Length: 339
Image (cartoon, rainbow, N blue to C red):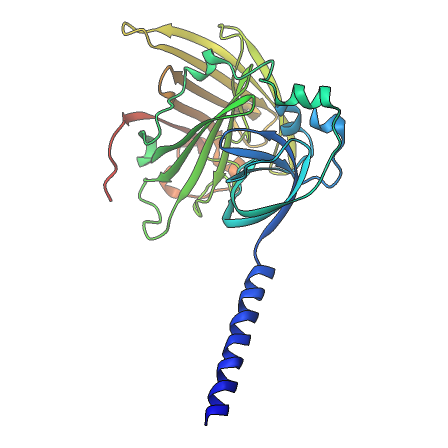
C-alpha cells in the first residue's frame, strides 16, 4: 500500500511538473528590437533585420515604414538597440502600434552603437510633441465623454492613458457603442490620439461585431490612421494622405476651414475632408467634417456617403437616393456611466 501511495505521489508530481513546463512553452512570446524608451513602456520593432539607420529614424518614419511596431509596458533596464524576447501577460491590443504588457523578458543581443550616437538617442528629442496641438485634447485619466447623433447613434468613451512616449504624446480612450444594437454582446473599441511635433494622428481598434465599415481600423470614418490636425493651425492650411479602402488606394485631402474663439476662451477648429473617386458616393466624393475644441478634443463628426459604397442594406438608415448624412456630437463630459 505504501509503495502504491509513493508511486502515485511521484506520478502526480511528474504530471504537475510537465503541466508547468507545457504552460511556459506555450506562453505567448514576441521578439523585437528596442527603438524607443519612455517612462511607461518601450517601443519594439518585430522586423527581423534592424540596422543602425533604422534606429535613428523618427517616430513618423517608423509608423510609415514596415516595422511591425508594438508598445510593451512593464519593461525596465533596457537600451535602444537591444533585441528582446518577451513573454506576454494577457493579450495584445491590435491598435497600431500594438500594445501589450510583459510578464517577463530576456535580452537576446544588442546592436553595437557608437557612444556618441548612443548619447544622442538617450537625450531629449529635438522635436518633442507640440504643446499647441496637445492643448486641444483632454488629459485627465478617468474622464468620460458621451456622444449622441443621428438615427439613435451613441457611444461613450473613457480616457484610460495620457502619457509621453518618446517624442510623441499618446491619449488612449476605451469606448463602447450605446445605440441599442446588439445589447447582448460587447461592442467595444479603442481610440488613440498620437500628438507629434507637427500633427495629430487617430488610430482605431474596433471590436464591434456590428461595425458597418467591416474593418477593425475604422470607427465611423473610412480613413484609417487619419491625420486629424496639422500645423500650422490656420484657416486654409491643408494636407493630403494616401490610404487603402476596400482594396483600393485613395487620397484624402483635409483643410482647416474655420477657427473661432468662444467667450470663455476655448478655441474651436473645424476641418473638412474630401476623398475623390469613391464609387457609389454622391458625385463620387466622400465628405467628412470634424470639429475640435480645446480641452475636449473632437466634439463633432459628420460625413456624407452612400450605403452602396459600404455595402449595407440596413432599412433603419434608408434615405432618398440611398444617400446618408451621418453625424454625432459631444453631449456630455465628465459624467459617470452606471451599468
